Image (cartoon, rainbow, N blue to C red; front, side):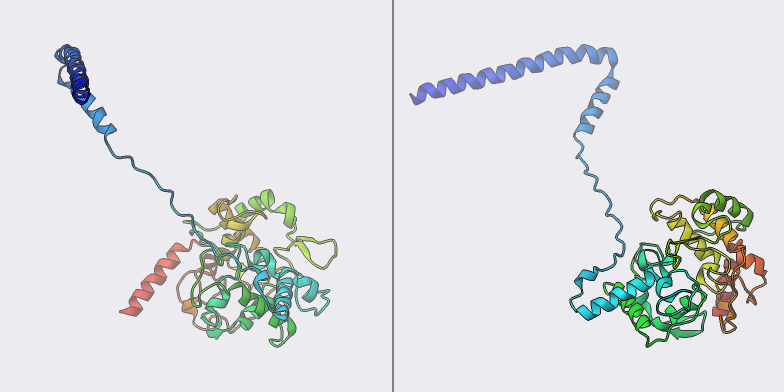
Length: 355
């Protein structure tokens, strides 16, 4: 039986080999005339195709998505009294005018704007001038005051400048609640670090002067619906807060506020306005952002007397709108640009000073 099976296997192998030989002969008979007619060029192309098919398959991996700071969840707070204090702090940021505005139910010390008019979503929006890095970097030295500042000083600067009002008593219930809220927001950030997405997103300088007249056209086309033709914004139904804040005039931020620097205003509107815009999908071009910032900050607003600002004038930002300066550029150029020549001179001065 085994001998019979071996004979069957040998016959099967012979048939298989004969088939392979016949296929080879047929292919040869086919390719020889083709080769004689088309020459080596065809064979090279065939070989090239076969070689390409033999190449290893490369799997393209997607680049990892950029990770941004996210505010911690208040639900994670276990202590009921701490939870209540932080909730009150958030409420004061979101509805400042209700408690501390001209008709405030606690005090009347500010202009009617809310902190979150500048620090969006109660200071939690990515690149919405959020508080993500405040707890991690304060206390810190600030060239504007020439001193080391703590969170109390930073908060009261906003009350005195952006809210054109008076500072809070550092021991008050309201200041302690605001501080607790800001510290809580930064509780997931390593001390000394600045998380991605905090503050405002950077915006390139223009090669020209920012133009208030162009900015007026942009304002009328894209901003006037909310902030009104006179820039005075729109009050909420309760009359205590603004649904859309005033951008100039007696109830807006004063000329000592951070937004009065057009680079700050331009970054803010580029990546956050009109309301609802996010930094990944802006509606304004860079030029539109700079020009509308120039227009808004060319309008009248309250003045604040701050003679102690910038004790070292060489440390003033390129777009600080008030002299004196350590360079030869005019006050107008420092306000509207172009800023690149000022930056270049500053770099040369620093290089010379280091030699």
